[in-house]
Length: 256
Ligand SMILES: C[S@@+](CC[C@H](N)C(=O)[O-])C[C@H]1O[C@@H](n2cnc3c(N)ncnc32)[C@H](O)[C@@H]1O
Image 1 (tube, rainbow, N blue to C red):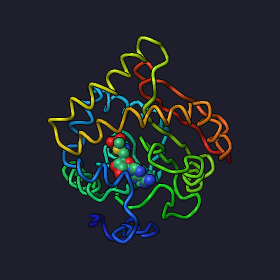
Image 2: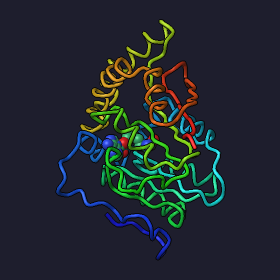
Image 3: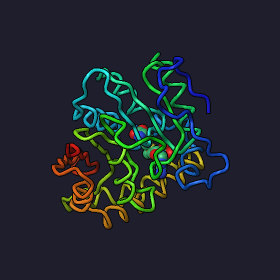
Image 4: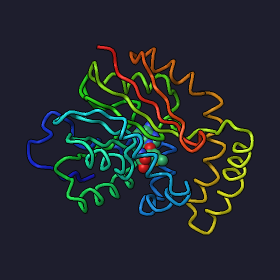
């Protein structure tokens, strides 16, 4: 894919990673097809919580001028642009989906942020960066798409500098019984029906998300995730449930 940047600015980082010959992932199949309408429908389907959740995540970051940030699973670069809006740093957005990145590139250009954000195609499981490159690494809605979440967190921690911040945002399942019941009805019934008239791609997402989130949360409850973070050099992990636990933000600092 094309990445627009000023000459020499990103000299130490690789350009876009070719993926044409690589095996396609589930994420590419799911997201390539919905990229142009992603931002609109992601907002609608989360009752307009998508942006506030993202803003809360970015508000947890304590960056200094000139810091370098990696936004893994950047998709249409929404998180990367939110960071650029609130912090004076440079951001690399990485995603496996070419189409999501194309949409992201257009959005970045519209916001005239192309001098500060570079997009790279690649996989979170094998980041194309040397050890300890970034001052902060942020990942959103990633772990449900990887085969080995433990190994992926290890890989994210690898590229983080000592003293750097790791932050994540992921869907969760509300704890309170009645909220959980509503959550289940929404995810298992309403979403598949609601997405049916939107497009085939969105209907696929609408049917996929509920079972996928349930399965992931069963296997990887927040306590287990926090333990994995600790095992990978992030001793103090903070978590905040949002909208009664429908989303979870986690953040921590890597040992020096
Ligand atoms: C739900 S979207 C979130 C996009 C963006 N983070 C946001 O909050 O708007 C998930 C993104 O993760 C990407 N993705 C999934 N698995 C990935 C992987 N293993 N490596 C890199 N990107 C991945 C998908 O292509 C998709 O763009």
